[in-house]
Image (cartoon, rainbow, N blue to C red; front, side, top):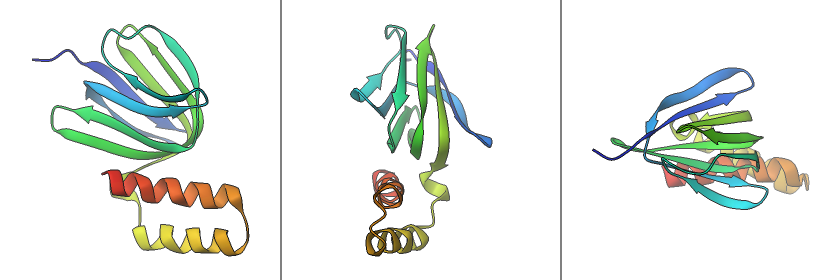
Amino acid sequence: MAAELHVELVAADRSVWSGEATLVIARTTSGDIGVMPGHQPLLGVLESGPVTIRTADGNVVAAVHGGFISFADDKLSLLAEVAELADEIDIQRAERALERAKSAADAAAERRADVRLRAVAGH
């Protein structure tokens, strides 16, 4: 069996996902990062983007908007301002939000809607 790390994905209002994984890919202010068991300790700032958690049963994908990532002793914490699992995202609602943001020239809202759609596509 492959080595695993313990992952906690937490949003400001709830625990989103918790479990064991072999790899987590997230976007930080320094770029995309992949964390596997045995990785050097790290602390980083999360950018809005999809997070992929590779488990023994497949991938868990979430749309994450801001927050922090920390890793030490094979425990990875993703502390997000907002996080939604791809399974929870209403695609039609996200597409409408993207169109509204584009028409209102709201770059931040456009980015949030785009991240949600990319998380669903990567699922």
